[in-house]
Image (cartoon, rainbow, N blue to C red; front, side, top):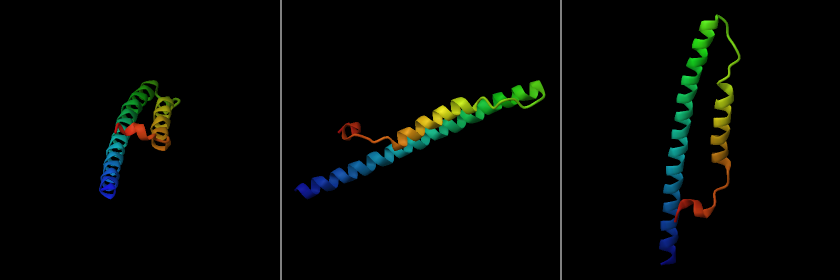
Amino acid sequence: MAERSDHTGRIADRERDRKELREWIEEWRYWLGGAVILSAVWGVRCFQKGEPTFYWPLLPLGVWAAVLVALAVWPRGEEAGGS
């Protein structure tokens, strides 16, 4: 009986890991969308000025990317699964 519950627990862990991976990848898609929008704003502004300026989207995108990477490498406790 203990073997069956251990197998069920491993399946649940794998499902949770897959769900978290999907959510993490979705966050990177949001990041990419934000990068496109911010870069477009920067590009329009450079076009208006007639010269390239400091690529200011690097700052918010860098912080956002650092948070996403930290979420990937931060150790996860057992209570995080909600089970």
